Length: 304
Image 1: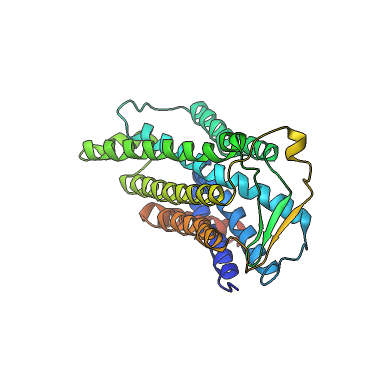
Image 2: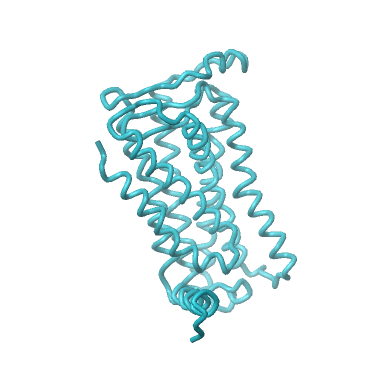
């Protein structure tokens, strides 16, 4: 039993409301996407920890179908969101930064929305192609997605998140280099993007730490699964899905506990990192003041 799972996951999910206040006003799609995907994953983990505490009963198969697919999407969406954020920070910190118009900002938001939500949707569809059976239920952890481990699954599901994470870390390294090269004039360089040096550093630190955690998650999952399930030969789509309705049940004694316990903490940890870096700093405090002022004047009808 893990009685700490549900409280930790619920706490992580609700804490995301704090950075959402300031981020919503800025319209930064990449950060909003990170918050959204982390919230969804934390809530899934919390519900699963309650429903499947001490059992592997097939209680809510439709919930498992939906939640496992969203977990798959989050494994790509969180790195993709960090990639968009790192690319934006790299542009903001470079000498080629130019003033952008409202239409330029709108186009960037559309592009970020496609990367942060459109590509994860495509990724979830690709996962269905290599999904050997419906899902697994692991005692105390709940529903988990499944993969028919083969060369196609490596190419379509396992490798893409790792590639995105590596590119994001590469952008992060460039951003840190830009900061170290021009620390004296850095505030002036960032003015066009509306960022302060403090917020800039917090965003890049958040992205790097999250990418390191997500890379740990994907590497551990891939390594454990390849050790447990050697690569199988891909024959035909029909053959891979011939017993698709099967649901794997793993009680506490037989489940992949070490892998699950390590990887379970990655999303709550990413959440706490996100909340910590986005909710601190003078700029965040100013956003909270503006939000409180708006609530008083528009909701409570009491002007300051």
